[in-house]
Image 1 (cartoon, one colour):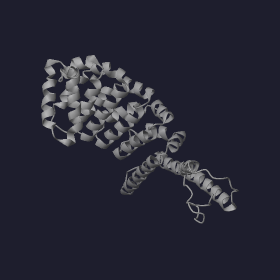
Image 2 (image 1 turned 45 degrees about the vertical axis):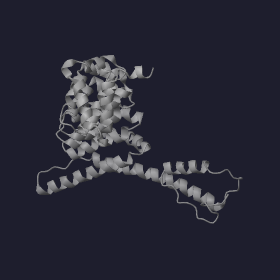
Image 3 (image 1 turned 30 degrees about the vertical axis):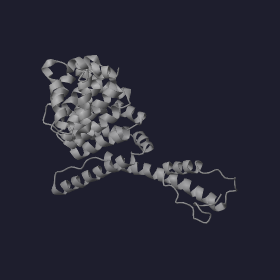
Image 4 (image 1 turned 120 degrees about the horizontal axis):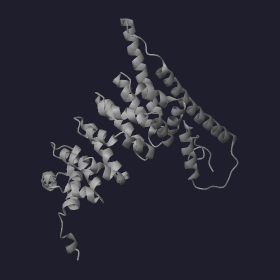
Length: 336
């Protein structure tokens, strides 16, 4: 087998810069065409040793970067009694923002996210930064909680144990900053999706009511993301449909569809479809005469017809008509 690259005289490829890169190199090598075993040359052996050292050094460097960021975040906040102090405070806040930004970038790596928690980073976010007086630090903290918690059960469990869910729901419901509310919703989503303990906390803290209020806000991005989360929770946890119906969710979703038309309605109708699918109680509530939902859906179908950008919303309308009002009663007869 030729040494180095694809050809026999090509230099060896650039070594990976982290453990994931080294693993990818191993996978690629494992998928290569089998070849007769050959003694490893001194050059090849040295290259492999250097690649492994470089990969481990890169991982250690990232841990050191996280430790340095945490030192910045753990430091006491300077006073603001004079002009000089104000300038110092401004510089300090900028350093903290940069530290949170770098941590969010590093913690996209699942191993780093786990190490961040081992370094007590999640505790620091929960106790000092999720409710910090500076909104630029609050939204970055919420974003970092979500980034760390994505698909990492141990991190999710620690965040939940530290009371992050309660604080994030409070931010989503009451924070004056749009950015903070949007990032809080992102973090909540990362703590409840595929995480039973997170969902239980969400339910105990009346999370569905908070989600509905977010859908009724004036922030378009927040409305869309809230409806999308509701739709996915209904798909993943159909056992919650009865709870939502008892809260009047059908009536509230229909009321949202009656507001001025926007792209947000696609996600509301999607949530309504999820709520009534294979759930007779939801269907019956949609059929209540006072909602006049059948007429509303037919009008919406006429509005959206031949508008390609609203095709998914149109599909949801037609699905609701079929599920709730049997708009195609002769379909079965035609198949006979």
